[in-house]
Image (cartoon, rainbow, N blue to C red):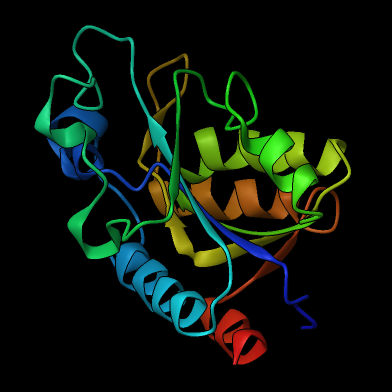
Length: 186
Protein backbone atom coordinates (compact mmCIF):
# COMPACT_ATOMS: atom_id res chain seq x y z
CA UNK A 1 0.00 0.00 0.00
CA UNK A 2 1.30 3.44 -0.93
CA UNK A 3 -0.08 5.90 1.60
CA UNK A 4 0.65 9.57 0.85
CA UNK A 5 2.25 11.62 3.62
CA UNK A 6 -0.83 13.85 3.79
CA UNK A 7 -3.27 10.93 4.28
CA UNK A 8 -5.60 11.63 7.21
CA UNK A 9 -6.57 9.05 9.82
CA UNK A 10 -10.34 9.62 10.16
CA UNK A 11 -11.67 8.03 13.35
CA UNK A 12 -15.46 7.85 13.14
CA UNK A 13 -17.66 7.65 16.25
CA UNK A 14 -15.45 5.55 18.49
CA UNK A 15 -17.52 6.40 21.53
CA UNK A 16 -18.03 4.60 24.82
CA UNK A 17 -21.78 4.28 24.26
CA UNK A 18 -21.23 1.65 21.59
CA UNK A 19 -20.17 -0.75 24.35
CA UNK A 20 -23.80 -0.88 25.52
CA UNK A 21 -24.85 -4.23 24.04
CA UNK A 22 -28.18 -4.03 25.88
CA UNK A 23 -28.97 -1.07 23.61
CA UNK A 24 -27.20 -2.07 20.36
CA UNK A 25 -27.04 -5.87 20.52
CA UNK A 26 -24.05 -8.18 20.13
CA UNK A 27 -21.01 -6.80 18.32
CA UNK A 28 -18.22 -8.21 16.19
CA UNK A 29 -14.51 -7.37 16.34
CA UNK A 30 -13.89 -6.63 20.02
CA UNK A 31 -10.34 -5.55 19.05
CA UNK A 32 -11.43 -2.64 16.84
CA UNK A 33 -10.53 0.01 19.43
CA UNK A 34 -7.13 -1.60 20.07
CA UNK A 35 -6.37 -1.58 16.35
CA UNK A 36 -7.49 2.04 16.06
CA UNK A 37 -5.24 2.91 19.01
CA UNK A 38 -2.27 1.26 17.24
CA UNK A 39 -2.86 3.33 14.09
CA UNK A 40 -3.47 6.49 16.10
CA UNK A 41 -0.15 6.09 17.90
CA UNK A 42 1.67 5.50 14.60
CA UNK A 43 0.08 8.55 12.98
CA UNK A 44 0.96 10.67 16.01
CA UNK A 45 4.57 9.44 16.09
CA UNK A 46 4.94 10.12 12.36
CA UNK A 47 3.40 13.61 12.66
CA UNK A 48 0.59 12.63 10.30
CA UNK A 49 -2.87 14.24 10.42
CA UNK A 50 -5.72 12.79 12.51
CA UNK A 51 -9.36 13.89 12.69
CA UNK A 52 -11.98 12.51 15.07
CA UNK A 53 -15.70 12.43 14.33
CA UNK A 54 -18.10 12.37 17.28
CA UNK A 55 -21.78 11.51 16.90
CA UNK A 56 -24.11 13.76 18.90
CA UNK A 57 -27.28 11.68 18.79
CA UNK A 58 -30.63 13.40 18.76
CA UNK A 59 -32.46 10.17 19.67
CA UNK A 60 -34.03 10.38 23.14
CA UNK A 61 -32.83 6.96 24.36
CA UNK A 62 -29.42 6.85 22.68
CA UNK A 63 -26.29 6.33 24.77
CA UNK A 64 -24.62 8.74 22.30
CA UNK A 65 -26.63 11.81 23.35
CA UNK A 66 -24.44 14.68 24.52
CA UNK A 67 -25.91 14.40 28.05
CA UNK A 68 -24.89 10.74 28.38
CA UNK A 69 -21.49 9.40 29.48
CA UNK A 70 -21.51 7.13 26.39
CA UNK A 71 -21.13 10.20 24.19
CA UNK A 72 -17.46 10.46 25.19
CA UNK A 73 -14.81 9.30 22.76
CA UNK A 74 -13.53 5.92 23.94
CA UNK A 75 -10.61 6.45 26.36
CA UNK A 76 -8.38 4.01 24.45
CA UNK A 77 -8.37 6.43 21.48
CA UNK A 78 -9.06 9.76 23.16
CA UNK A 79 -7.91 12.87 21.28
CA UNK A 80 -4.74 14.62 22.40
CA UNK A 81 -5.10 17.97 20.71
CA UNK A 82 -6.38 16.60 17.39
CA UNK A 83 -9.43 18.10 15.74
CA UNK A 84 -12.85 16.70 16.72
CA UNK A 85 -15.80 17.38 14.43
CA UNK A 86 -19.26 16.74 15.83
CA UNK A 87 -22.18 15.54 13.73
CA UNK A 88 -25.84 14.71 14.25
CA UNK A 89 -26.41 12.51 11.18
CA UNK A 90 -24.71 9.40 9.78
CA UNK A 91 -22.34 11.22 7.42
CA UNK A 92 -19.28 13.04 8.74
CA UNK A 93 -19.56 15.35 5.70
CA UNK A 94 -22.94 16.91 6.52
CA UNK A 95 -22.96 20.08 8.63
CA UNK A 96 -19.31 19.70 9.65
CA UNK A 97 -16.16 21.48 8.46
CA UNK A 98 -14.62 18.17 7.29
CA UNK A 99 -14.65 18.79 3.54
CA UNK A 100 -13.55 22.42 3.84
CA UNK A 101 -10.74 21.47 6.23
CA UNK A 102 -9.42 18.67 4.01
CA UNK A 103 -9.60 20.65 0.78
CA UNK A 104 -7.89 23.68 2.35
CA UNK A 105 -4.98 21.43 3.39
CA UNK A 106 -4.92 19.56 0.03
CA UNK A 107 -5.60 16.31 1.89
CA UNK A 108 -7.40 14.01 -0.53
CA UNK A 109 -6.67 10.60 1.04
CA UNK A 110 -8.40 9.18 4.11
CA UNK A 111 -7.75 6.13 6.25
CA UNK A 112 -11.20 5.47 7.70
CA UNK A 113 -11.94 3.41 10.80
CA UNK A 114 -14.55 3.40 13.54
CA UNK A 115 -18.08 2.53 14.49
CA UNK A 116 -20.31 1.27 13.14
CA UNK A 117 -19.31 -0.38 9.88
CA UNK A 118 -22.80 -0.41 8.39
CA UNK A 119 -23.94 3.03 9.54
CA UNK A 120 -21.68 6.06 9.96
CA UNK A 121 -18.49 4.43 8.66
CA UNK A 122 -20.20 3.26 5.48
CA UNK A 123 -22.08 6.51 4.92
CA UNK A 124 -18.95 8.61 5.42
CA UNK A 125 -16.93 6.31 3.15
CA UNK A 126 -19.52 6.34 0.36
CA UNK A 127 -19.97 10.10 0.41
CA UNK A 128 -16.23 10.75 0.61
CA UNK A 129 -15.56 8.57 -2.41
CA UNK A 130 -18.35 10.27 -4.37
CA UNK A 131 -16.75 13.62 -3.50
CA UNK A 132 -13.45 12.49 -5.05
CA UNK A 133 -11.49 11.46 -1.96
CA UNK A 134 -9.34 8.32 -1.98
CA UNK A 135 -10.49 6.11 0.86
CA UNK A 136 -8.71 3.25 2.63
CA UNK A 137 -11.19 1.48 4.91
CA UNK A 138 -9.59 -0.55 7.71
CA UNK A 139 -11.45 -3.86 8.12
CA UNK A 140 -10.14 -4.85 11.56
CA UNK A 141 -10.49 -1.31 12.92
CA UNK A 142 -14.26 -1.19 12.39
CA UNK A 143 -17.12 -3.04 14.05
CA UNK A 144 -20.89 -3.27 14.04
CA UNK A 145 -23.77 -5.00 15.81
CA UNK A 146 -26.27 -7.71 14.98
CA UNK A 147 -29.13 -6.46 12.82
CA UNK A 148 -32.77 -7.52 12.65
CA UNK A 149 -34.52 -7.94 9.33
CA UNK A 150 -38.02 -6.57 8.86
CA UNK A 151 -39.40 -10.07 9.44
CA UNK A 152 -37.48 -10.45 12.73
CA UNK A 153 -34.54 -12.62 11.67
CA UNK A 154 -31.15 -11.78 13.17
CA UNK A 155 -28.16 -11.18 10.93
CA UNK A 156 -24.98 -11.67 12.98
CA UNK A 157 -22.67 -8.68 13.30
CA UNK A 158 -19.78 -10.50 11.61
CA UNK A 159 -21.94 -11.16 8.56
CA UNK A 160 -23.20 -7.57 8.46
CA UNK A 161 -19.60 -6.34 8.69
CA UNK A 162 -18.31 -8.60 5.91
CA UNK A 163 -21.22 -7.80 3.62
CA UNK A 164 -20.77 -4.06 4.09
CA UNK A 165 -17.04 -4.23 3.44
CA UNK A 166 -17.62 -6.35 0.33
CA UNK A 167 -20.06 -3.74 -1.00
CA UNK A 168 -17.56 -0.91 -0.38
CA UNK A 169 -14.34 -2.59 -1.59
CA UNK A 170 -13.13 -1.50 -5.03
CA UNK A 171 -16.24 0.63 -5.47
CA UNK A 172 -15.96 3.30 -2.75
CA UNK A 173 -12.76 2.29 -0.94
CA UNK A 174 -9.83 -0.04 -0.77
CA UNK A 175 -10.44 -2.31 2.18
CA UNK A 176 -7.21 -2.90 4.10
CA UNK A 177 -5.96 -3.98 7.53
CA UNK A 178 -4.35 -2.26 10.49
CA UNK A 179 -1.03 -4.01 9.83
CA UNK A 180 -1.02 -2.85 6.20
CA UNK A 181 -1.68 0.73 7.31
CA UNK A 182 1.08 0.54 9.92
CA UNK A 183 3.56 -0.67 7.31
CA UNK A 184 2.63 2.27 5.08
CA UNK A 185 2.92 4.85 7.88
CA UNK A 186 6.42 3.94 9.07
